[in-house]
Length: 318
Ligand code: BDR
Ligand code: CA
Image (cartoon, rainbow, N blue to C red; front, side):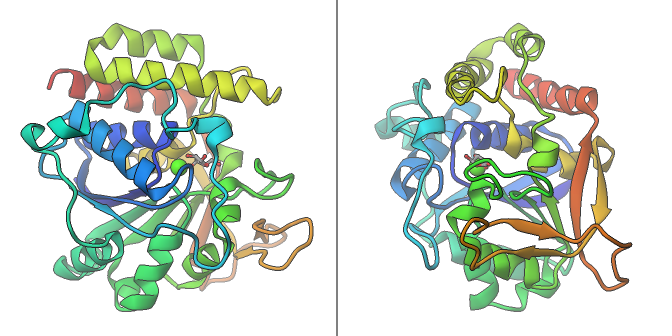
């Protein structure tokens, strides 16, 4: 299995990404680090711990990282994920977590990323960031040697042809564009799993029915989350079913065949009046030989849901 660090801001789709990573036999989830994004750091960290408890994620390091973007003020996404960051989901009482073997590592999330990468062989660790890129950029700046050691970065963020928080920018990139710039520019291999791809991962009634058949607390948590997340997405008037963005990045680590990708240089817009946070991918020509970034384009939808359902079912069995 591939060893990964999941850097996240749960968040409904983040929570499902955690479950996919933990439940997949192709992934060894070493650590979950949290970052201010969909909600404040305190809230997303509490959510990460709660999800970990429901899924019995003993042995996975959980650590809190940066509590705000590198340069800009925190924006959050309460309108999609609720005031708690996991609206509509009831999580276990934090007081009971130690008994469940779930606790917060005392280290800063950025140090957990650095120490984990440095403690493993070159090419062993894959970083999977599915929130604003603050922790990953900080880690690369604090310990630049991680850039050579990381196998690859598979991130959810950006989009070649679309934005969501603005017409041109996706939330994770807009929330901290300077950190995104650092990550795209570092020189490690980056796969951008952006909105072009994730808007194909729609949690339809059929998908929810399959998850419902699994039963048990994990499936229940997912369905409660998707119901509230789906309602928020419907309110936007743009979606009948909510896109599960973040699990797509994890799915690519599980199985490369789940999506098509294309190599392309990607730049992050840091100064645009109307385009701040846009990921500008140059698709005009074939990418230059030294290009180490690629963008995800087409999802094998059936394969994706099979992966998700299989992982959730594995967790259902305990
Ligand atoms: C991204 O933004 C967040 O709200 C989601 O968790 C996902 O990571 C989608 O734009
Ligand atoms: Ca997220």
